[in-house]
Each structure stands twice: as C-alpha cells, then as structure tokens.
Length: 467
Ligand SMILES: O=C(O)C1=C[C@@H](OP(=O)(O)O)[C@@H](O)[C@H](O)C1
Ligand SMILES: C=C(OP(=O)(O)O)C(=O)O
Picture 1 (tube, helix red, strand yellow):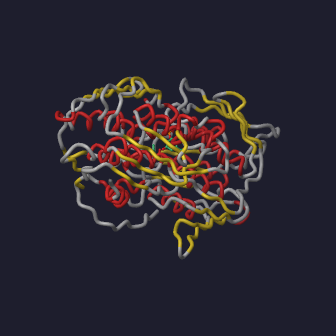
Picture 2 (cartoon, protein in one colour):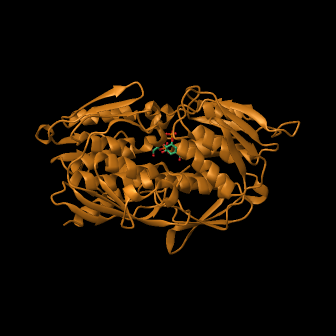
Picture 3 (cartoon, helix red, strand yellow):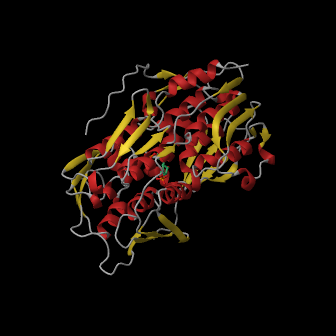
C-alpha cells in the first residue's frame, strides 16, 4: 500500500516563468502513461517476463507497479535505467489475493487492476486518495459482477474504497463468450479495463456499451491494439460492441513505450503562446494516443507544423501512418492565436486543459464540446477550468457537454495564484497561462508528478532555449 517518496523541493506556490523571448526549444517527453500502464497490465497477464523500455516513471506508473507487486507480480527496474523495467507474472498466472491495492488518483490503476482479481486466489481491497472517491467506478464493478465477482463497498455505493472477491468458477458454462453490458459514457477506462482481462476468461467475452456517448475512443483502440499485439483477438464488430476471444496473452519479449503525446501538449502549446518553435523528438507517425490529434488542433489555432521538416499540410494522414516511422514534430507560432469556434474533443478529453489554456489567449472564442465526462476526471475539470480562466480575467462558462471560452485583450488579463485541485493538467494549464500573463503562481505544482517526473525542470529547460 505504501507509495514511494518524492523528495524534490519546489516553492509553493510556484512562480510560473514568463516567456520573455520567443522560443527555440527541444523538449524530450517521457513515456506515455496510458501505454506504460497497459503494457504493465498485459505483461502481468502473460506467462513470460517482459522487458518494458521507456516506461514512464511517475506517480501513476509507480502506483501501477506497486499494485501489481501486491498481486504477486515482480517489477524490477534496470540498475542503470529506471525507465527499463522487467515484469515477471506470478507462477501459473494466479494473482495473490487477500491483499490491498492503493490506487492514488490514477484512473488507469482503479479501472485496470480490479479486473485482475478475476484471476486471484482471494479478495482484494482497493483504496485511493480521498479525491478518488468521487471518480466514477460503478460501471466497471457492475461488469465484474456480471463475470461472477462479488463487490463490497466500504464507503459510498459505487465508489472507492471497495473489495472485489473472485468468482468460484470463471467463464460461461457453454463455452460461448459471456455477454456483459456496461455504460462507459463516464469513462472509456471501464471498457479498456474489462477488455484487458477478457482474453483470459474461458469462452471469452462479448461486451456491449449501453450509454449514449462513448468518450476517448482512441484510448479503447489503444487497448485493442495492445491486446492484439500480445496475441489476443479482440474486435469491435460495431461501435460500442467488442468481442474478445479466449487467448493466452504474451507481449513481445521487449516493448518500447512511445513518448506521452498528451504531456507534449503544454510544451508544443508554448510555441503558440510565447511564439517561436518547440520541437518534440520521437513523435510517432502512427499512434493510438489521442495526442496524435494535437498537430491538427494546433494547426487550427494558427501554428505551423512540420514533421521531420515536411509541412503538416502536405502530410497525408494515411501515407504518414507508416508504423515504423517516428520523427521530430516542430510547432512554430508567431504569437498570434486564432479562436477555434466549436471543437469536438470527445476523442481526446485529456488534451482539453492544454487546449483551453491556448484558447484563453486566442483572438476569438472557442467552445470545446463532447467532454462532459471531464467532470469525473481528477477533479471536475470543467468547473476548475472556468474558475481558473475567470481568475485571470478572461471569461468562460460551463456547457452541458463542455466549456465555452471568451478571451479578453492581453491588458485585461492579470496574475493570480492558481488552484490546481490535485490535478496535474490544471497545473500545466496554469503554467501555460503564465508564459504570457505576468504574476501567475501555481499551487501544488508537484501534482504534475502524476504523469511527469520533473515538470518544473523540463519547463525551465524549455524556456532557457530561446532566440
Ligand atoms: O485509458 C486511458 O489510458 C485513458 C483514458 C481516458 O480516460 P476517460 O475516458 O475517462 O477520459 C483519458 O482521459 C485518461 O487520461 C487515460
Ligand atoms: C484523466 C486523466 O487521468 P486518469 O488516467 O487518472 O483518468 C488524465 O491524465 O488526464
């Protein structure tokens, strides 16, 4: 249950640096949280050790490794490189029960680990940060109940903390896929969590999403691609329906994690806000990360985008998606930012705080829609964004399914101490505003450790590289 100590000392509130010159920077972004935690889960579900290279080392991945360790999985980092970790599954694939897992505030831990209890030899209790008690969990646990698990809540019904007890017998009696129905409209992670475990269920699983909307489809496609890369057989015969055939899962002996493209957003966005160029190396030309949508969003704001020197306009999405190719993405801004009008962000909700920061400094209004489920993220992000945008003197309002942002002239914006609500993306959002608005200070900037080990160091390094 213990978490590792993080010791770096940073002033609180942290004075966000102002950009006083246009940028000419390269930012190397650590590994993807979503891919890191999927590879850890899939490696734990396999039979043989898997070496994961470029693993993100941050609070969410440390929580995931500790969760797996509690279940009898060995996660051993290389002595000379903590981002290379070898995962060895438990003997016979049986996870250790009668234990506890601490989820922190990590959606990928609280939604991807409980399904592993289906293969445990006893009950597992799950707990997390107090703020995690407000995050939706019930649809995932309803899915597990349909697979025969027993769930006991220790606080509010449908929320952390809870205990999952494995079924006495797993899988259908007739050898056909078990049919389960889950409403995943409040988080794609319910579908992903169930799919990740489903290959190991005798007879497999037919999963149907029952809600009206389904956010973060790229993240579900990421789950499918990773399962299939591990020898699984998962298909989506139609939107909102997945068929998982029973299969042994074994990732390749070594897998390499792509950089976290969503965490690239504040850095690339800085080129628009401060003006100048920011480059991110190892940008994958093919990716299931929703951050793959970032170049086109930044382009709409008015940025010039190149990949290995090729203009973005001339990069045909299909041709560019050659699996083996990765290059340096370069975003250049001239200090002007166009309002977006209405932008559907349902596929990439985790980019919304960064996009909102840029939109706050634009020359016209933006409405980011399709993201009502952000109310159940680390904090109620729609409410938090409105409060913090208003705090610096611009205007914003909550919509049913998103946020409307009404920028004001730069001289009407003013510094403030920004709240972050234990939300890493609210901290990076505030840092982005601080590039242009003098006097921005950020409370608890260390909350960025959820997915970035040294955000303030990387931010300072970017600003030190200017024209
Ligand atoms: O599966 C994943 O790795 C994630 C899915 C998304 O969750 P939601 O569908 O809840 O937004 C995303 O926002 C989160 O940061 C990571
Ligand atoms: C929503 C997010 O995280 P989580 O994986 O905790 O859901 C996020 O990182 O923006």
